[in-house]
Length: 283
Length: 283
Image (cartoon, rainbow over all chains, first blue to last red; front, side, top):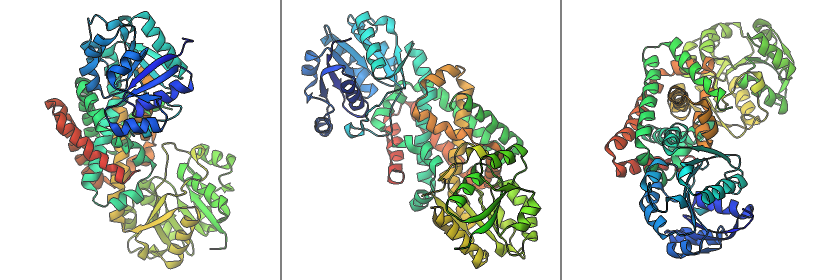
């Protein structure tokens, strides 16, 4: 772990860019090479000094000790087997928000051991290299999945890297991860997107929203600014869990609706008192 | 306006307590007298020096130049006519989150002119005197409703007071206020309460939520910690508008559900791109 690694980051947006900053800050990289299909993002990543150089994918992988994937999960799923084919000594880590589809896609692959499936629980509603944040990931959780399917050198380096950038490790299997992620992250994004559409659909007076919106509105709706290219594939890959939570959420909203329709003040208060129990989890 | 007023604040919780701090800070009060039914809150308000003294309601009104109501909107609606009966010179201001039911309750009252209906668009998910915040209300909007029904001295003092504590004024009629408030505030609270219940219902592993929950979850669910005694009456008084927005919200969520069920990736992305338009309003 003392030795600095040559690191390639595929996708130098919000997540990849923020990780690059932390890898430099913590002295984990000897060089960071970026790869990005978007020429504007590639130029910005260099300009912002997130990476030392930008190259093509093949070249980056060939030269690297560690390859980190910070791209949408549909692309990860698509290219993961072919990427593994190209590796010999390298460690390959993905940072995607779903895990089952990814680990299933390389199950039994002869080089499966080089791959570590991870999900650092950090993000913002912004995207692209300019959204990269110093000190990101610190004091947040990272989930590492199916660690027993990774080679021990790969898993150890990955664990240490996440610890050094200030994250605390949680390990679980990919299916459990996807279930929990649906509850603690994916449903929040769906409700926020839908809330934005509700207000944009019904409230024609932008000026009124803008002037009257208080902190409460802003915090419930801010995730609606998130990047569809990143989030649509997450929802699709985790669709069974997300659908399950979404159905429950619609039925919880219907309880509020029914209370209002029937003017059932007592049950309305009870529903809200139930919801107050979230205090025991979120301080 | 140069003259400091004797101010009575009925309800020394989050809102009343925070306003007391600002009135002192900005030199608007010669004395602040608090009134609160909850003996614990009364003691805390004194201990935290939010108010100079706590007295009974009658005594407070009798001695005051300005009486400010920072209590749940069902109680405001209930006591407003009787309070007006007791006034001669005093200005009576309420800070409630609904306005139509309140102004309708005193329409035609012989002392209607002493009353100013206002809604400062600020709050947090916490409650009680200990939740009072220094510098609250600054740079936020305050809505004043049906200003033409108030006496000119009352409306002028109120406008100046809100300006001095750093708020920008919006004036509209009470019905318009309630409609806009349903969009920019009330629905956010409903979705947050319902989201908390969804997760508490489905996710039995508190530890997993606690460890994995990231900023996104916290921001969408934090309003679920809000006080039911304050919010249930708001939803009931504004039930027609809230129901209307809630129906729209459920139908927006159903669109996401249908996309997932049919694996309609293109329409899913389109819904999210639509939601991204909220960026033009919330930076």
